[in-house]
Image 1 (cartoon, rainbow, N blue to C red):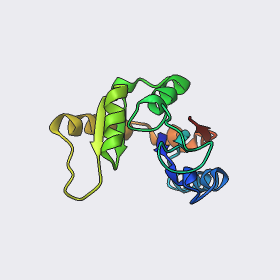
Image 2 (image 1 turned 90 degrees about the horizontal axis):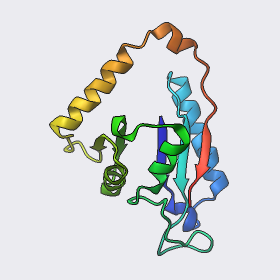
Image 3 (image 1 turned 135 degrees about the vertical axis):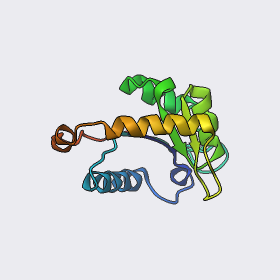
Image 4 (image 1 turned 30 degrees about the vertical axis):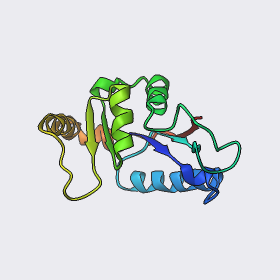
Length: 151
């Protein structure tokens, strides 16, 4: 699993990059405790209109632009057409569509449902994961999480 996230709170001074990295390390440990892991977190600390230098910037990595997703795909060898993106904002879906992500799921309320094609893609991912032999999956050592700043 790869996380791609805008972090305008850094630009606005609500929290530091170090605090964000610490939070992501904690989140990663929570996933590991439940038998899953985050391979990498890509984040953009910039905002085009708010904040102070060097974070007040119009970044190609900031969603809805696809730069952060494309960077993650290039770094990690991801096949975007075969990937699934879950987001809570329309800008997430715009970035995913522009990057060529195959399955896009906007989840921001109980009333949000995926399209039939997206639901089918998500079910195929679920079936693939269920087919994994639990023995090898359970003994795999969690991979080292990478936290990547994208400007």
